[in-house]
Length: 199
Image (cartoon, rainbow, N blue to C red; front, side, top):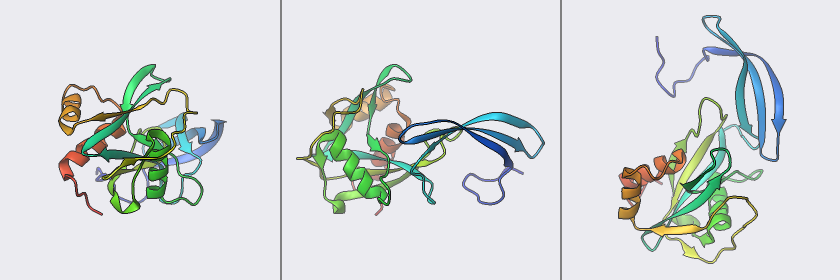
């Protein structure tokens, strides 16, 4: 019997071993030896896990800034795919940091925009790559952004902010110009829920 997505219970895969393949400041990279219910095994299943992953399973955050009715996206160059992409401000949680606070901090660092905590709304969670990344992203929209923050330019490839009307962003989505999965999901959720997503 196939279990519905999100159902809890004993997993149909057991981990027989794990070895650390590599790490950096924010990620651990493992090779797991896993065995399924049928006995089929994979001895080198790749798992990439954020170091700040907590009991909630949240490994990172992303936030969609709204500035005077416009949508703000970042144009970033991503080395692994060797492409420029349209993205949201995003990042990892600092130790003990709440997801909403982390999202506001990342937005300021990457776009220079600020927002009152009362004007941020959750848009749920996204699994960026559920077959490899051990963690989910908490996604938010910031409804009344304004300039005033200091941009951190130290991340290679992270580009400048760009303002678009909602109609322009809908056209970009329809033409498949926005390919980053978290950005696509967050934008569609924002458009579906309107300016007052659930608190």
